[in-house]
Image 1 (cartoon, one colour):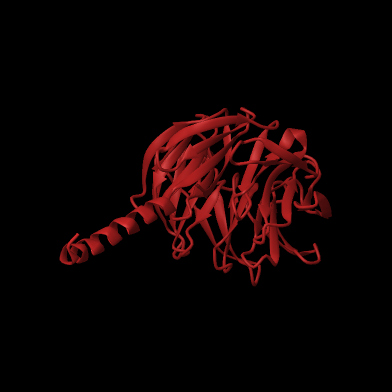
Image 2 (cartoon, rainbow, N blue to C red; image 1 turned 120 degrees about the vertical axis):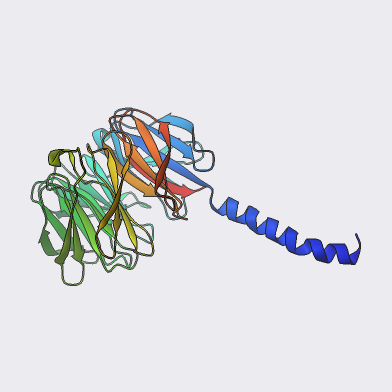
Amino acid sequence: MPLAVHRRLAPLLAGAAALLAADAAGAYTVYVSNERGNSISVIDSETLTVTQTAKVGRRPRGITTSPDGKVIYLCASDDHSVQVIDPASLKILRKLKSGPDPELFALHPSGNPLYVANEDDNQVTVLDVEQNKIIAQVPVGTEPEGMAVSPDGAILVATSETTNMAHFIDTKTYKIVANVLVDARPRFAEFTADGQRLWVSAEVGGTVAVIDPATRKIIHKIGFKIPGVSKEAIQPVGVRITKDGKKAFVALGPANRVAVVNAETFEVEKYLLVGQRVWQLALTPDEKLLFTTNGNSNDVSVIDVPELKVVKSLKVGGAPWGVVVAPK
């Protein structure tokens, strides 16, 4: 090839390589737990297709992956265990001592330990996932569910559905250092990426409380009004906040909507119509797509985040509950 031609093509080839690298970086695998299907479904984020469904333990709900994506952790609630699953084969590698009826959990940023909400026993189990050893069991309020760990790993938050509190737990001493009263039936907790705010959804109260973790004070409550939808049907559950802290998404349960919220002003900007009884949410790491689990329509809605538009609905197993995205 003549040198002049090579020089002209070089920038084009470099640009093509960069595009290919960007496309590869945006390829993810999505895992969905199907509560009544006793299974997990796998979605390819590029093709937006369900590639596989595999049987797991009974009543699977909370689901997450290790930081390196090498294992999946799954709450098999009716088996009273956390299952460790191989992402490649979807085979159950082992079962962890989770305490009774695990529903939701949060993994320490380091990848160990795992903090598990035991709804029936009103406690949080602290589990060493490498040694399969229970480190501590922390009594909390009645029916704990929502779990979140601060980005620095110092504070664990558990929400108790019947006590209507967000409990702040020191991860070194496993002592409760504060209790924040929120509205009725708190179901989910989510820290912002900088750790400066904590969002807690209240399903029956119909609100999301935004809490300052430093003062443990509520600085704002977000309410929701949807034309043609009864107040009782608007039940906030899952929450996801973009890494820059500018936008938040809230699953509104039987309202069949995801609220798009300005996370700086706390104003609701838009409602997106999704499937029936939208429960949990997961953003892809590049924050281009948001996946929602719709328990009553047995499907997952896919939202284009930059366009704020639902682009696809995917049939999965019975009563999809939890969802997590891992690198492909």
